[in-house]
Length: 286
Image 1 (cartoon, rainbow, N blue to C red):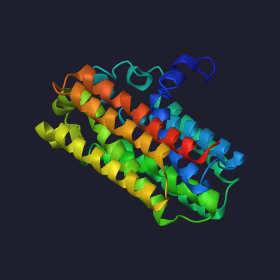
Image 2: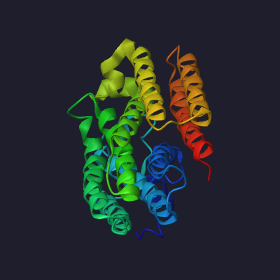
Image 3: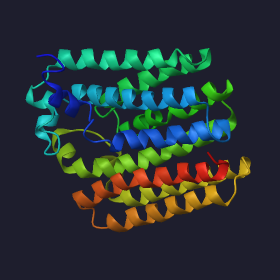
């Protein structure tokens, strides 16, 4: 069955019906672009990176479901995914993944040589993440690296190099991702324990919320350092204040560790990350 004929299943596979993952990837990417340009980035780069976010997030979802196709049928939240039900075959999923990666790479070819080199690491990280949960309790760290790698790429594309400030911002985004994806993993923790899937939620156990809080505090500390180095003023710090308030809200709603509250906390990070970008927009102006 062709992609067009089976579009609803392919749409579900690429999570086009659930844009939260795209948002969580997009906002840190825009942090990088705005910081690198010290304001509105070049229009061509803005288009390339936004399109790249959509393509690579879709590719990441496809390869994730390919890796988990035999596991997903045993997890309540994922048992109806197209690869778990057989609506889409493993070969079709791999072809789609390849097509999405090639499309993203074509976009990168319109940037500079350093950004093109960095893009290879992006594909390696996106491809390896789904398989990490079989070998390590830290797949969330690999996801953080994958989701944040667009930051050094944004600096490279905009300025031709990757300065210290880019790596500070990158580190902040990685820590934030580990924190919110641990909330996400807490939703599936009981199922993961039964089938032997590893995650930071399983590793942290009863220390989960405490460690998430520490990671979020480190995220804020790094972003405050970025603001200090770049001499950013009250608009940026207002964005960080909103982020801090939302982090406290997430801790509050997950105090009982109920699945629904953990998932709500995960979703809430979209607003926390958006607040930082809006702070940068207000700081530099459009």
